[in-house]
Image (cartoon, rainbow, N blue to C red; front, side, top):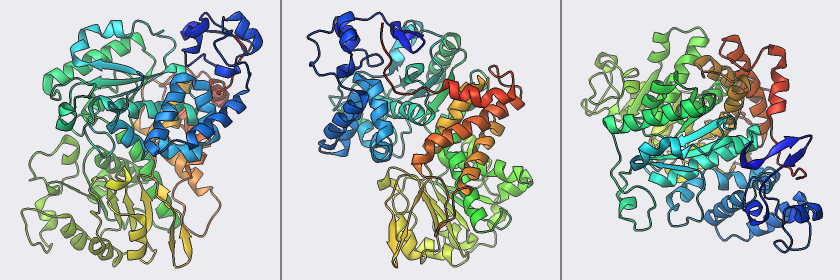
Length: 565
């Protein structure tokens, strides 16, 4: 195993001693090293004399966490804890999961990304800049090819709703890796986090003297593709069975990269596929809870980038699984981007956008002020949508006028302002509830506090990818799947809907389980994904379908100290 470890009957044989051991976050126990271990590994005098249990360390860490002056510094504290003692970090995070998740992940991770260079403490993850493209094999030479199951990688161009963040995007992939371990119990020692530094077009970063990334305009075209090709080929050769999780690539590259490499190496893009799975699951729950189906739905997606087109594609697949034709499914979806309503005559459409562009004759009967630019407002007033999804990062785009116009034509308008962080959200839940007299069915991308309206407290569902991607990853690793298919993603979506509908009925409609249910969800989703991989003949790790639950259980890692010898 890595880090000089060998496991035998819950006893770990290790090589490092003294300060080398204390500086190894995978092996370090800090004050929990026993007297026997302190003597054996040259730790006398290097630690305070009191010997603590893991639980005692967690209590101390929580006291320290509470003293941090801001959410940013709470995030930094958590990363420092992770860099010092991973066992303690994950035990702490599991103990206080609900409280720390918004700090570790969205929305606070956005600030951690933007402040990465200014608040840099110590390197975590793997940094590969374009000038080092000739050294890819050397960069990965120190890693045991049999010990890496999962690789989370970004190029930092499309981070959350804050765009191009260059090398600071390493914080995103580290946070994702943490959630894989927290929710799916994937051993953190078996995960690599990587940022591909291909420059940045963020002038603020380039002009910042503290910026730690490659000071060059962002690569594109053949240079970019050639670099990604070299990276994938190296990964495929070094870690042939690893799942490659692509994260926060820009709108022009995200789908291109996924489609180019998904049959070369098992690939997953959370912004395209994870977002789509969790959003469509919430839509299906909304329809089921209001006794509706797809037949009478008119769907408007405001923001036709990576997330928006990913959601649209998943809606099409969901409708086709329900028996609708592809043509019927596409006819239900209307997409709007910076060019206004996407039409076949619209210039510079991406390949994904072209699939959803409407013909000019589709809107000949519409009342329009400007026929050359079909604005969001025009679409809502003429189409009278029943479902409105926001992926635009345009704060306040869902105005009172637009929402009220929508609510006139449907008893329960389904409105999902998904842009994050919160300050990029198309509308606040509080406004949506007041404007629709609490008839709107709402889910957001970032966490919002419950809203009190006419004496009733309404909990706001969060379309958080963390509900699905850990389970998808665990399912792929369980099956040792050679590919992640659309049907495997649909199995994840169906499982999430099933788990949502199993929640006891409450006074309000439930769209998704709460985030504290994510660990159990990960297990159920992993079971569905692995089973589907087995059915499709894409599993190299399952010989007997009935053995899948046992394999999942055996794979799970727990944060605990084992005796060292």
